[in-house]
Image (cartoon, rainbow, N blue to C red; front, side, top):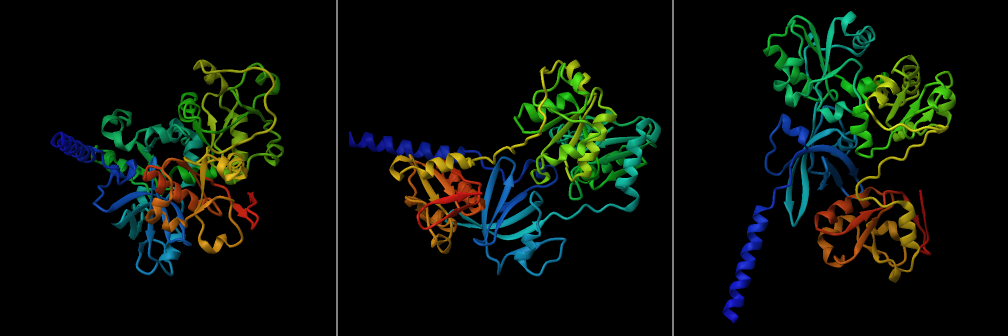
Length: 457
């Protein structure tokens, strides 16, 4: 019997080892990075997300997952096109969402960045590029009068969130399968654009087009980010449904039609707006800092919608689009229509960051007696920050010490992390989630006093 039990244990152990070996490796790069690059061992390619200089930590986003890395200010090397006094200053200068490559070492489950390389702007000859002002003039004329062909090289999901008017989607990853979209006349003006100065997709499209014999090819190198700061984009009814409604992505819909006409039928959640009174709308409009996606609708995608969209862009809003074909196109596509009075004021609540807990739910848990909470509140602030007070019953482990003190964190209970601003709490969330914990984090700023009472921003 003992021999049989031993055999069973050995077989189980072998099975576990095989299972671990068969587990798919986590991607070391964001999908878009793999179009142009391979990623070596102990390298990561993704989007710079969060920097915590207090704890010498940074957060890198790789599509739907996040990596947390430590760094030593004295030894970290930062390669950036922007000059900086030291590594810390160079890190602070990296914009959220910018593409970076990170080299790291790993010890005891902790990744430490040794090098951060910031993706530099694409370099093209002057005759290969077109300026924003020139492109705006062409778009205002339209392809027939302006004698141009404009192509968006971004992947289709990005194109569906909004594009430069008159553009056709020709994704760089699928370029070779869609060459039939290019004009027959190889001397025609062909313009490509993508996601901005560091994006290689439109320059890559230029190179492919030239190999096919096109002789008048240019790139709008500043891409959609620059266009969105100066002008509105467009999207189709189908794109709006797929990119926003189907994904439950919050957005603001403004209906610029006459009130009597709009009341006969409108898109769900639409807010009435008078094209002559956009200034009044902006007085109560969601802050531009929230970057709310905005879609403006009139009957056909005409002057009224374009006027409202232009005023919003002047007011500092990006991500403003006009619905192509207007409400008529929406109806023709058989998409949902509502009747009755439209909303008079726009509201926008950003989609919560993955793993976050609302302030109201956190407050309810934290104000309950520790034994009745059913969760562990994990305070990941540094010890100096807790001198003024901690939430009653909270477990205090500074975020840099989490990996070395996992044994103190119960695996059989839900964990809710907080710090003082929400940034380190999110780092803690990703670290613990990686270790298999049932964990969430508070994204709000919080102040705790010596009685254990707290206030949230």
